[in-house]
Length: 164
Image 1 (cartoon, rainbow, N blue to C red):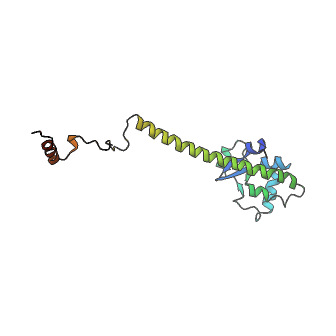
Image 2 (cartoon, one colour; image 1 turned 180 degrees about the vertical axis):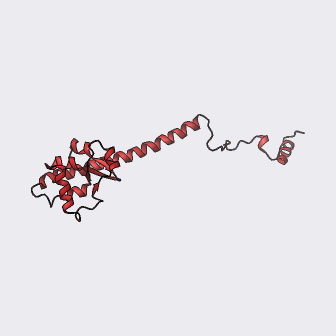
Image 3 (cartoon, rainbow, N blue to C red; image 1 turned 90 degrees about the vertical axis):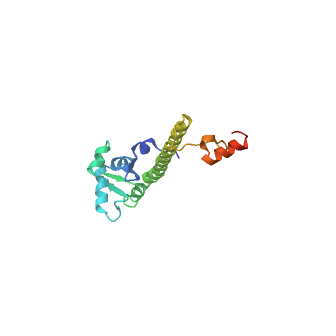
């Protein structure tokens, strides 16, 4: 099922959860945002803060439409029993909401992977350019210069080669 653009474009990431603002949810259900707020206030036991966020002033300043509340997917699903006749609209909205939420999650995971790859490429670039990492000097395996040998070994090495 393709995600409706109006759902995806209005979805917010608030308090580590995907949520839809009250105005956008009201548009989908054919209700006004104040009617949704009244419904939530009338049934506070049904809508815990984890499912329906009452946005702080700071959160509202960062959002262009400045909604009062935001509903998570589960919060929107809880409206089904309280809005008789709105079940078809909710049943169309919830799958689109879930798919949009999965897209946001996939985008966040992809962003983290790209950041990790950028860090690896930066490190490889420094190594290729000859910059030493953490001051560790590497010597090729099996190659030892006379300067690297301990003092006593230098004399024995010269004697075995027949040098004075």
